[in-house]
Figure 1 (cartoon, one colour):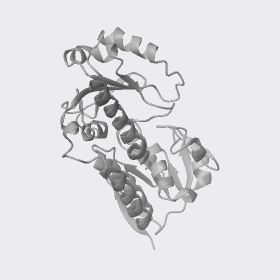
Figure 2 (cartoon, helix red, strand yellow):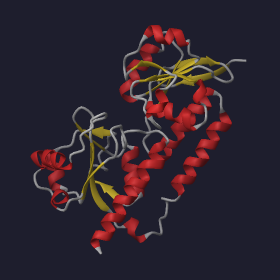
Figure 3 (tube, one colour):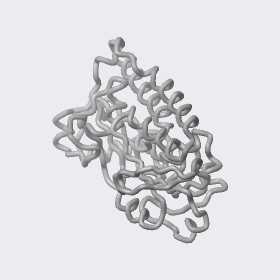
Figure 4 (cartoon, one colour):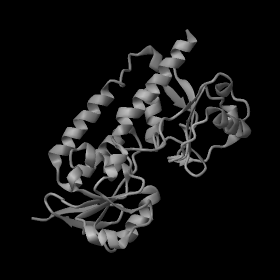
Length: 286
């Protein structure tokens, strides 16, 4: 019996089997969500950027394309029940693809709770409701340890500037799960009141709002994590900020997207990373 699912991004109804068996994902967060729900067998094709929870995700799966391009012959070979993309940068790609294939575009999350919701949404759309609810419980349980409004240290906000190299410097405003996560653990994003998801950082604004901490994410796949070169690059644009003078520039781990990844591992990996930075700063202030 076919199920009907409406995709708001493409304005189309999809007729899907009760349980999708052949899934293609152009979204790293969707691919990881499917794996984390124990549904790896149904994930037949992924994009070149799908590397979470590890590179092993590529084993036994077709590489179908990148963010906005696809291999028609490979997709036809898979004959997918459903193709996942995201909105945002993939929206036009999703709409074009939906003219030929059953496409569901998952919205980009605005908050941490929205991030969990979008991860769970993937399983529901595929028809695996219990797997979805189980993932939700695990993510909420992991997140719960960071929600403590009685913690005095959390109320003492530390100003932070976040930058991700997405082919150029990008930072994040109020409509971002990254800003929300920072707020959870006691940071105040200096761009947190800008009504935007992401934006190009204005050097004068960064200088005027002098962050206590800088968190920097290099471009995906870039192996160099030379902190001195990163500091020199920051100084060339912003000047000698106190965060740089005080050695409070923190680089995200690994060569893959970290803060920029909005799959389940954001809860499992990013929160401990942010808390570790926060605790280090508190110890340094004693």
